[in-house]
Length: 539
Image 1: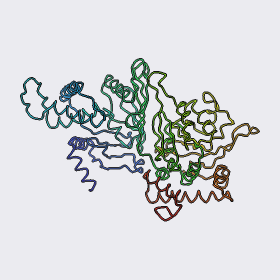
Image 2: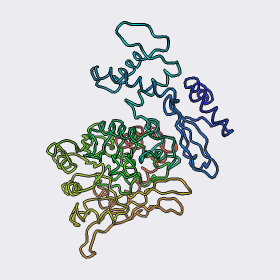
Image 3: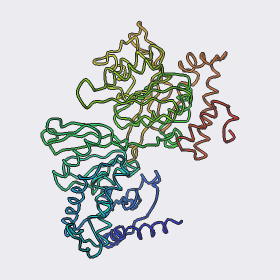
Image 4: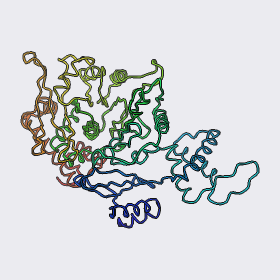
């Protein structure tokens, strides 16, 4: 079906979309382009004018004018002044009946029950007279469609921010008081929106609902809460004007159920195929790897993408505050901290990692190290358990400083139990937000005469050329003294031939458009088990 045909079908199903476009054309004398996917190259466009769907009846309009900031406009059914009172009456009636019903277990059943209550509360024709029962509220066909969508959106889904939670192109949703909601778009970066809460009460009510969904109810006595929403996204809430002086606020960090693939990161330039091949060798051979960087530098995305390199038969144990790690392996024990409830029932990261040591996993993955659990992670490495983790630090030097200082207090002589540190940075380049592996450094060992830990940079990003330089070619401590020895190479330098072979495999996947996460996992597995002959394409 041609895109114009898709657009026509969307307009037929959604009259509010046609109404919006007609009004836009009158005021701007311009017609938006309807697309289903946004190419990354569009980040260079200073005056975009596109509409894309995020699931009926919601559409997103990205619009920019010369000399003005780009706008993010949500197109969805909206109530006029005459409809608001009628809608509120229907909601009140539905909730009143809902309190007398048995609560459905699943969200899908709850949605069906809510729609059934709505159907009983309204009629699109003259109401029939029934003895001893209040008549249904009469609505027009247009009102019926609007109300049916909005009642599910406001009671079950995410209310005013539902469009943003559906949009796969968003990374971050942020709101302070009654100001318009701010977004970070994967293509267009920080962007203004037309999403906002209409009153302090509606914002506070919404925040209370969200806090209950994550199992950490907020109130004046406990105004700060954070956790994982049912969708997997992470929310942080600051409730009440006493704490958040410009009004209650929240931040939602979007979670993607299917991780970005390693080939996608290579295509985007986040890392080179040689860097990915290096990490492939490291993880396949049980090296401990930390991914460091500042907030939103892409640490978790890179961690998830590289998990395909861990042996498919490995037993993996993950410990997190917010569940974001998604290894594709069959034997994966996923545990999360528990902060709500009485103190004796809470479970901290420190406890989870101690439990991990008793489970004899092949790999321990820590979603994010923040405090004293870092010491347990190094104890795990000391006893032969490889660890992967993310950590807030902008360089290897600062990472070491934080680990050997309070409150983590890892002895400096233990630091070389960590084999590799991957440093990621996020920055704007020609107005476009990019993420890059700035460096991959090996931790060679602690030398008393040198007064610290010796590190060796094997890869370094060159900002002038936007290339990742392989500085460790024929000079890698981990490849030669760890992995080559483990693999029984007589000539340790032959390990570089294997690295370049794997880089060629990754390049071949990129060139063939293989960007699906599970597909890359299967190809890596096939190479591990059958070598080049197991690949689904000639090399």
